[in-house]
Length: 377
Image 1 (cartoon, rainbow, N blue to C red):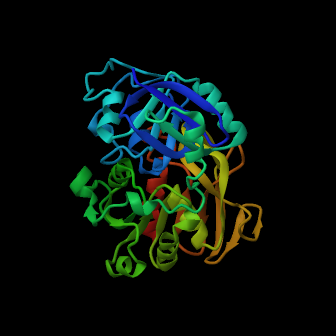
Image 2: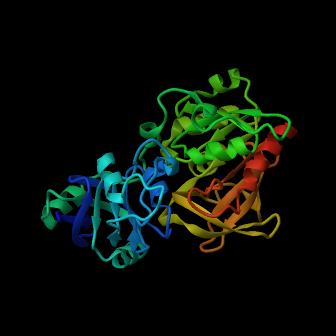
């Protein structure tokens, strides 16, 4: 087996065996606590620019299948596991985990102490790293890691968005007509996951997927029933075109944002965002809806968050640039704001992933809330 080296910017080094493509990768070192769902992680555009460590010790047991991909390619910069399965066991398997990485030109490393790595990131925070099968000298690789750009200030959505607009029906089939009316929405692709389109379609919502830099005036000229702001990678404050587009449609059509889309809505409302120490990435984050007291087990992938004190507020009621907003959802692990709903303009958003690919289905009701928002409008 080919040797591989992983070096964090603080000088911590891990030697292991390479799998996937030979080569090098630089990015932000993060960890994901999901016990399954590695293919959805690999193909989630929100992971662009990140070297992802899976905390569950064995990955690749059920192989990969194009049906489970969340986009058309692998987006992670590098992949780190304790052990990669050599012989996946699943009748749907098309490729092994290693073959999937090789096909995507992505380097992986196995045989390292992923628990030690995860604890390091929890103690010190997400940090820049380098992963190489070519340069196995710690000092030399560390020197190159430290000249890499960090995630703060990085506009990455431009690199993962669609080049041209397309209809969701062309990718995942027609929207359900069981509700009596199919709503049409403009879906901004900042790093859109395919299962979001499936959940929109299941709620009777047909999407036209648009490039991330599409100006608001083009959306308003399309006479859509609503606007969807997708998940995506990078620093939300650096995604200025997304903030501007959100401001341009707020108050005119209903808006629903997920993950990066939630952060962009928060910034468009005059709030602010900040970088979390090591982020939330996994399938088991407890989030409470303050409106009902209900706790949802939710799927997450984000390194930034909307600051709840970005506006003047009284409890869970904030005064924004577009009127009042209710801070609706909160993370029960660390108190992070996870969702909001505007009261004077039709808009709502959540930080986590209600489409849950992978993950639990507790939050699917939010697509129905978006539909109800459009129906009311």
